[in-house]
Length: 319
Image (cartoon, rainbow, N blue to C red; front, side):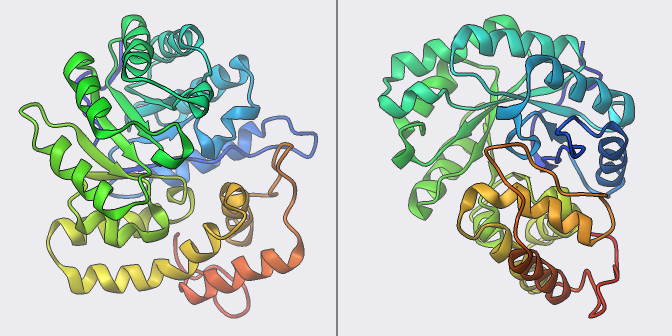
C-alpha cells in the first residue's frame, strides 16, 4: 500500500533525472544525491520517476524497478512518488502499474501508447485506461499530448475517460494550443469531482499557470525546482509582480532547455547540473548523444543570466 494513501496529484512535482556512468549503467550514488537534493526543496507535492526525464524509453523493466527501489529508500518517507507507465501495449502498462503500486508508488503517470499515432478512438482510450486501472487502484495522471501528435485525447474523449475511469485524478497537460489548454483547465477542474490540470508547458510556465492550473509536473524541476515552487506560490497568491520577476529569472534557462531539437531537453538539464556541481557527468543513453561544447556554453550563459552561476562559473545559490 502507498505510504501516502490519500494523495491527489497537485502542486509542484519535479520529474528527476537518471545519472549514468560512462558505460551507460545507472550511477546509483549520483542518483541518490540528486533525489536528496530535489526532495530538500520547500513546497513540493511529489517527485516523478520512470518518465521522460529518467530516459524511461531506454530503461529495462528491471532498471525501472531499481529506480523506484532507490527512490523509495532515499525519499519515499518524505514525499509521494509518481511512477511513469511507459508502454505501447495495455497489458504491459497494467503490469507496470501493478509493480509500481507494490513498490510503494503513490500515483501513476500514464503515457499515451505509441500506436495511437496511427489513429485512436474513444473506445480504445477507455479500454487502455480501464486495463491499467484494473491492475492498480493508485490515482492516475493522464499525460495529455498535443493533438497534432495523434496521441492527445480530444476533450470529448477526456470527458468520457473521467466519467468511466474514476481513478484518473489529474492530467499532465502538454497542450500547446492556449485556447485548448484553457478549455481543459476550465472543464476538468470544475467537474463535480475535479480533475487537476498539471502544466508541463515549461517553456511558457508562467502564462500556463496564470490560466488556473492546479499544479505543474516538469523535468526542468530537476534543475530549478525551487524557482518553480516559488513561481507557483506567487501565482496562487495572485502576486503577479513577484511571479513576473521569477519568470524573468527562469526565462533564460527555459529558452535553452526547450530549444530545438526538443528531444535534447533532459540532456541539457544534465549538463546544467554538471555546471552547477550537482552531477559528475552528463551521460545519456543512445539514441541521445553528448552535447557539443558550443551548446554547453549556451547552457552556462543561461545559468549565469538566471543568477545561478557567477561570471566565473561558480554556483551562487541553490538551484
